[in-house]
Image (spheres, rainbow over the protein chains, first blue to last red):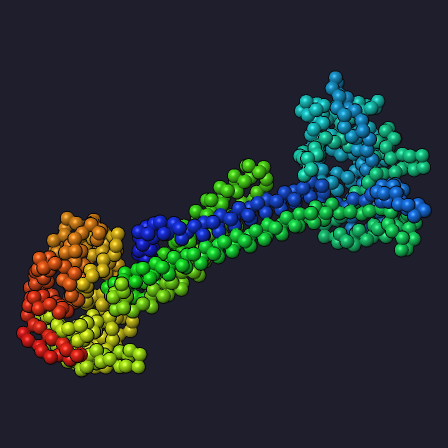
Length: 411
Length: 226
């Protein structure tokens, strides 16, 4: 008997017991559907996290002043001496494995173009800033190091500024007033969208650091004339994050004259690792759910085996007859095995439809990221076929071992 | 020319608990091609055991059994299946039709295991159903057929592979007298057309259709009359 004839016999038998077949499939349907839903959601979350990390700059270190300690009283975050241009320069020159270092200062200001105004923050940065923070120059260009030092009145603007100030028109070459100063727009930045906490990342204006410091007094205090609020350092691909952090810490401890054993009065943080750590629990939960779904599939398989055993018992006379009229034991075994596989694969396909549908509904209703991976879909279908073979083998073997005489007499 | 069926000193024993039961105790028997034989006896006489051996559903404990020139004892499990498929047609007391399956699919069942394509299976099953007078019921399921009609489907199934031997085990046991006569008429006709028919029965009226009657008691032949 060939495979096609076996398949036909199996399909006929399943159709004859349609309700029972459908119930037997239910476990597999639920199992496959839940695997697909849960994996898609957890993959989607993971991809969203990676996208978030990429939007900050994938290998970004953020260096900020920490707490000052004066007479045993600790001043709290940011109370320590500010970081300076000197620190930026020292890190750039002395720490190996960095592809870019930039200071940042900022000031709140109002932008005016024609009759329109818009209040935003102007950020003064070094040219390395754009690559370090993952900004893509959409049109125009960034300013150079020389233009930065010279304090040129150039700005790069984000998409929100283009919308609000220029009504979507190309602003390159336009002159805008910031505070009392005219600035030339030399570049625009590609959109980043909202951050995960709902902040508009495109409402930004960047100018050379020295320009912002001179024109707006940002980062200038009575004692320190060249402060920066934050230093961003971009770790070159393949470099060890922990080694670079250690080098920066060593350098800054010397520069800030911190005695051995005393606490750092600055902090070097890795944003990507912070975000990854925050989402670690989420992805572990996803894994746990996937394991749960796998268990559902296993239980579905046991259901299939149960139904197949019932079916073999109920159809004992049929098996006896088939053996009597010339079925080989292998024919009987294959018939029941194919029935089991067909049950599971149809269940798997139905589960696929339910799972993909459920995932899409979840994404639509929950406004959440999903990622339906074709590999996972293939694995889910493959797994259901495997369940069919694995849990069908024993009932099929039992059917094929029946003695035709006893089977024909079975009541 | 050797007989179609040759039995020499057939012995079949079963072990039930610690007791050895001699279901057949040295049976020697020849059946020629074209014969119409009734095997009779009470329950436990050994007639069903012989039937199982003649149908190659079971193997003798000792002795020699040749059917259509094949030494059945020497055949492996797959070869025995193929042998049954080609040589023997079975008719059972309980019909043993597949439920919720049409008459034509039921009648064509053995041909699946002969490896015939679907179209040819249907054609041959249709021909046999017409032969047993069910040409207008080919799409009916067993539940839509009377007992006599179901047994006709079973006979069509037994004939579909052009067997050399038709083995019928109490073929009228589940039927009323009138229907029994109709079924027996089919067997009579088939035998007239040259098929070797072997009936296993305990009913004298059924056995009277056969031209040779073999009576069993306690695992041995006590009477063999033509």
